Length: 329
Ligand SMILES: O=C(O)CCC(=O)C(=O)O
Ligand SMILES: [Fe+2]
Image (cartoon, rainbow, N blue to C red; front, side, top):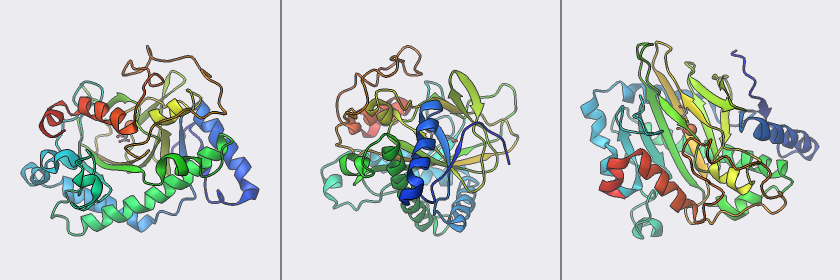
């Protein structure tokens, strides 16, 4: 097993009052120190994870023209489908990765789809490999449950009622699920798989294969966040940073794959509902930490932002896919 200073937190007993205080303390420590932690003791089936990895491998091994049959431009404002290597500019420069964008599956006659709300709609699933759609949807459901559980722990860690986030933001969460394939590359000159960034929402739950390459900027130092079998990596996003006045910082991270192998990763973004207005948590003193605008990768002040999560997200993703934004948003 790889060594890392990012803590592993066992969530098995999160609903057991005898263990809640200890787990909540571990979460508080991890979120104030690193903004990242590993989650063990979750209920997501190993076999389902294995199936997801196998099917993803088969999809990315297709020739590009096959993959482009479900190009993101065809997903319209639902923002779903395949994007090729160099198409996404996370930190202003093209990323050395290709990927698939999925989300909550909503039929065309769903009120939010009818109303034309961006990021809501049907998924674009490939024909090959068969059954990829069922696997993705089952995985999204299972990890969404895990994310609800982790958010419960985060609420307790802040001295809030367990259902705080659920009742205010996540009874109908915005779920974006992505599958990334980082191709092999020569070690020099290496290109970032994903440039430095923070995640936009509440909580990211990441599954990665055994290759590694994720790096996290903890207290100014870049450290590795290697895969640990049986766990997910969780990190907090900009909205939780904003709600907590910077007590729980959304931590910069990036990916460099110089392993000589190709890498797969599976981030699920568990975010407030699109129309949620993000409010400060009242039991946390204001300005608990200094503002970090000048040090932030995007030079923005998330604490000054006012509006809904949807508004925040749209301006962010518009920047990372500039061409597509003009075409479909
Ligand atoms: O691929 C990874 O390990 C991380 C991806 C990531 O940071 C993101 O999609 O926000
Ligand atoms: Fe990220």
